[in-house]
Length: 301
Ligand SMILES: [Zn+2]
Image (cartoon, rainbow, N blue to C red; front, side, top):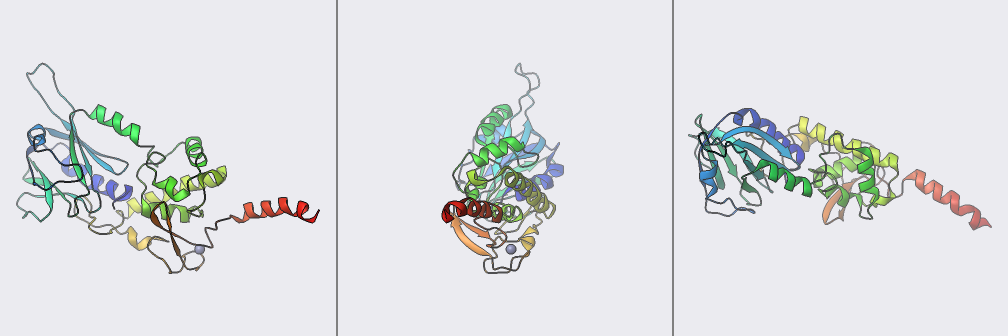
């Protein structure tokens, strides 16, 4: 499933291809997406100009300008919101390109190109919102901060305020937006934290390490255009390469790149969680030593 780096890659690819273009027509298939595109929106979107392409969490936002020249209510700023689901592809192609199977919504642009949403498994979605400001308010209520430049105290408070394990914490989009299964495992490896540890067991220094690791892993993955798993392609149709740099994700039984131990896989928060049992101990050495030290006097006495 595309996570933040893949969605960011699509957004960066699409931005120069879409910004300033007008939508001259919209057509849709009859098959339903997870949140189905309403055919009535075709007329709404036609005639709008694309003013920007952005990402929020794992969502793609296409900002539009609807110019009602001569009408009393002036211009409006609607927005398209796209989710790639498991297998979504959101790409710009020449209008003459034969339409592949599983294309569900097509936005024809004013330069003989088309923006197409293709999704074989149809877990993705495309939606029209009449007001960008209202959509942002709604999304900000459901999503936590973006992972870049997160507030250290707020992150510490959120992580240590829960008894859930770290895998569940990282998958919770209200704590940090955009991280999914792959990058949760990779960030926990980089931070040397076991995915099964409870959020409340983390010391401030471990929490800082985790925050920095999330940012570092996502930054590296974006630089590699994300990871190509299943049908993922960027907005220009190019694939990603970060799957070749995974330290633990999908590498069960293979050697840890740091210490050579066999990578383990365990089901946590309902998802396969990959980790190195040596680099990411359940009981971190420093904490274990403290506990032994505290126990031994009474044990002897
Ligand atoms: Zn290791």
